[in-house]
Length: 162
Image (tube, rainbow, N blue to C red; front, side, top):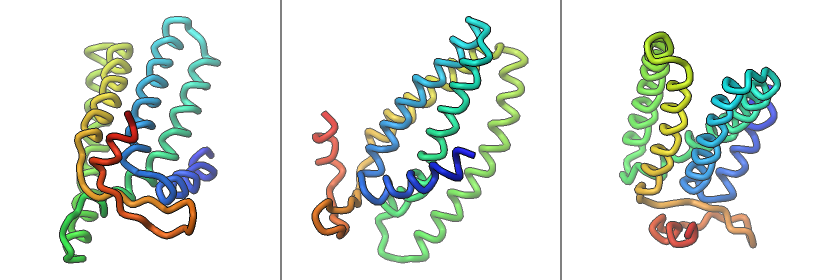
């Protein structure tokens, strides 16, 4: 249900603000939210488990359209076929890693325990944010004044975050 209501918000945010910065912020927030699963396990709280799951789903619903819209930012070629190939490769990789991730999660949960799996998930979000901080390229934002797209060099956006 959160996807139905929050995916359009993610699309709006992707058009309005710097996508890379949004993804960094959402990854950091998600990392802290996943830590809530550990608290829910420790406190044996079903209510906290549902709350954390709802927040995590909401963040994912916002993140997905933003992450899909960042691909044209990092493809520097003017050839439209390169973008089409990149989108195809992106979806193939996403599908492959979704299957692989499920298999690894089952194996990890069985042999490492669920708490360690949540720690790995939490760390993964922070690693993703760090990798995104290193991403360079063009960033497209909508101007607040006239709703036209403006190009900003993402190296300048790094200064804005600090």
